[in-house]
Amino acid sequence: MSDALPQLAAFLARAEKLLERIEPLLPPASPMPDWDAAIAFRWRKRGSASYLQPVSRPAPIRLQDLQDIDEQKARIDANTRQFVAGQPANNVLLTGARGSGKSSLIKALLNEYASDGLRIIEVEKHDLVDLPDIVDLIENRPERFIIFCDDLSFDAGDATFKALKVVLDGSIAAAPENVLIYATSNRRHLMPEYFEENLETHRVGEEIHPGEAIEEKVSLSERFGLWLSFYPFDQDAYLNIVAHWLGELGCKDAEIARAERDALNWALQRGSRSGRVAWQFAKDWAGAHQKARTRRGR
Image 1: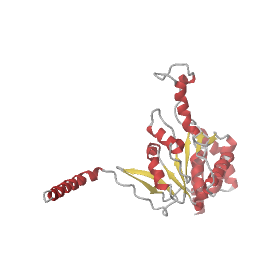
Image 2: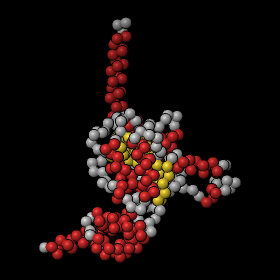
Image 3: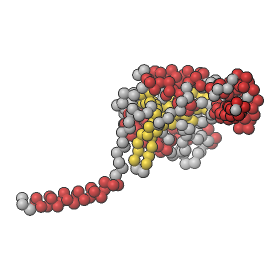
């Protein structure tokens, strides 16, 4: 017995030294965020550490700022209102034309329902592999969380593809009732599809059943219960959006009417009549004319 005690002490000393050497190599625990510090968060990585970073200045856009997408706005607003109220609601995939208000709509929903407990966590596509860790952090919180991923698309064999499928509804564990995923994409099926895949009887590389591979690509999109499609704006819709933003920036009705020709030329130069282009024009035109009014007032 007397010999065993020194041996045990020596073993414990060696184990302690080993732990001291291993500890720096282990990833640190993710720090818990200050939930009272913000209504929006970003998932960030620094070295081996991952954490939720509060967004100090969320985008101030409101639902009424988003023009000529009334149907899409009404459907996602109803879904979000159900979610915030604790009622059944769907994950949402917003697809279509660039600059048509997809991501702005999600930001506006945050401002509409933050006082009711809605929170948004923005996750970059390459960090979607961390979704299970993010869900573990928030599933027992009283707030209602939208995990937001912008410009979502995948390449074949992308590891984040399966991670997102699992969180949507492909795991043995039930998805938390206080978490939804809202994603935007220019591509409805999120993964590239090829003309050669159209015929199941046609050989596609070494794939024996290419039709099943196509089903795998489509299956992720189908896990979003609500699909919203966005389309390019026509000229009238584009000018309506320009007029709204010029009015918000302090321009008078006569100035807004005078700006129409410049707004159309601006869109022609950009090759797009999107909501984003309308907002960019409004800032440029209002800023220049406010500066001119200031000079005249001196």
